[in-house]
Image (cartoon, rainbow, N blue to C red; front, top):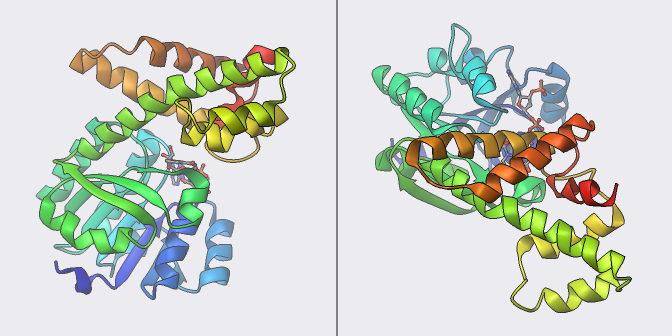
Length: 293
Ligand code: NAP
């Protein structure tokens, strides 16, 4: 399928990420049909961006050149992709299905295989960059699957992706996202410990952040989450529930490939403690709450 032939897109899952991502496609002039389990969100999306709303994932994709989903975990992806009302039951031959959820590499490979047997293309395409990345069209997108399907889908993803990279065969997008989450997990805990230390030392946190962000401690997390950690602001961004899900996916995969993940395993437990305290929907920078309470 040539790039220019993707004109009709179905978008399934209008959450924190999917809502603005689908919006970028509508603004770019594509014909977008949306499905969301909670219908009110689809109604408000259509009221804002135009396009059409469907009653099931299958109905949304019936005349689509490309289907896109952004839901929660492996089970959620199964719910929208498979079964008689699922995405794969409705797509026409040769169409492309790209999933932006963060899920296991196993389900990505399974969906690739199921799609292939039906004459369809599947791409696992998890994203990084958070809510603001989705709203500003500045996501990093890590894609696994066939090069030809990637070549066709890339221009569509570029409407909300700043870096869109083909990482290899089926599952390799999800494996790359795991690397991303492993790289973040210990860093967020280290930042929480550093900021708690600064506060207990009665330093001016803003001045600390200002000077150390220019040196070797500089990072996206320091620039975007250190000040809000100190202020106790966690009602935004990337939920604890999602981060724990992602780290559990990493730990499962590491049991297979033999990689040691001692710090990731510890941070996964810390997120579990936050969930026990009822903080599952707070931003994942809320790790500092375990140090100050
Ligand atoms: P969210 O705000 O909770 O939205 C989840 C969406 O999936 C909602 O539209 C929800 O429908 C739908 N959904 C969930 N389970 C479903 C099911 N069983 N059947 C049908 N629809 C279902 O989540 P999000 O923050 O957009 O995250 C979506 C995915 O992107 C996750 O895999 C997450 O790990 C990943 N991600 C998120 C971020 C971030 O910063 N938020 C960053 C990178 C990656 P309802 O409206 O009916 O609940």
